Amino acid sequence: MYQFEWSVIPPIIPLLLKGFELTLQLAVMSIAIATVLAVPLALARMSSLDPLRWLAQMYIEIFRGTPMLVQLVWVYYALPAVLGIQLNPIVAVTGALAANLTAFMSEAYRAALQSVPKEHIEAGEVLGLSKFDILRFITIPQAVRQQIPVILSLDISLFKDTALVSWLGVSDLMFTANIQASQTFRPMEIFTFTALMYFAVAFPLTLVASYLERRLIAKQSGQPTGTGGPSMRATLARIAPGNLLLGKW
Image (cartoon, one colour):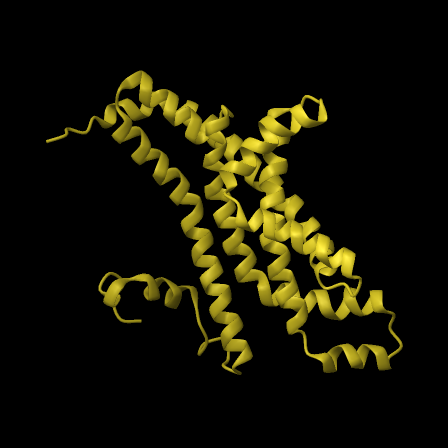
């Protein structure tokens, strides 16, 4: 039977934290870029101009229909060869991650924009608002609010997908864990600890996304979101099988 040796973990924690810092930086930068670029892409996808709509749809389908690892490899290795330029590794992987997330997030935005009641838009037109003002003050605020749980779920997936950049030699958390596992010959302990580090970030965000989703559903159904509505305790109780871990709520 395999004997775990957890004593190998404390000496390498500083190295893992350094790699984890880069992982968080890649995730935050990619999410920030995608959050902004997904808006014009969603609008282009809904455009009445056929060429613009087709280009947007082609972009979305390419990035949604191909593996993330293939996209990373292509941007990291093939794009510099095709363009004849030298890309900074961090810039290359951030661009690839952001491009992928933009495609998925734009579809979430599009669904949200199309779900805004026409009556609200017509009311803005009656008030004399321009199309830009209607988009700015009526459509986008409602759409983003409705899609926050979905956007958070996409962000969580992107955070976990950053582990793929280790295949390109980028010294993120997974790359550092691979190096330490090969040097200490203790992959079970190191990769288990690495998984817990990813989990420590992803799980709380998952709870927040679930909580916001339940609040949104309660609000849309007219259920009060105060004492009678969903709470974070109720969200925690929901993930406990049979409520055995957290008792009756």
